[in-house]
View 1: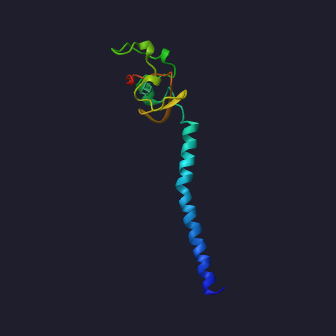
View 2: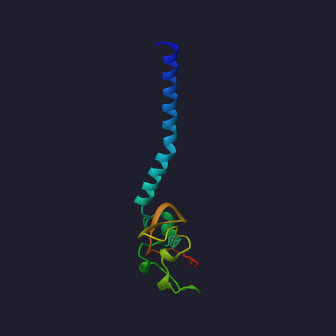
View 3: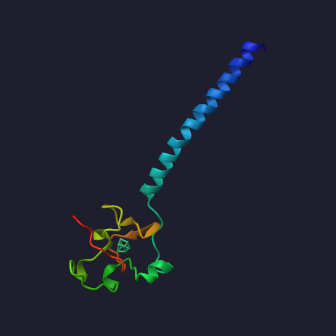
Length: 115
Ligand code: SF4
């Protein structure tokens, strides 16, 4: 193998490595999007924070109370300002990072979403 061949082989190896590295962010984006589409683990009723906030997947079984801007019967995770999505039965909530809450659930931090 002459010097020119060795240089070409090195160039190909370097370019191949750069191409592989350039693909890493793209793969991360694809896997993150798949993870979001698949959803986060569901918040468990027995999670310590969920228990402290009286969270329940079924709001009708939670200790809701009337608030000035919303009667108890109309309070759900889907109309709470802390829910981070407008679609799906299970949605991320700012108060429970890494978990999805039920759109028809409720917890004591419920606050009416504006708009
Ligand atoms: S903060 Fe809002 S969205 Fe999150 S669990 Fe409580 S009621 Fe549901």
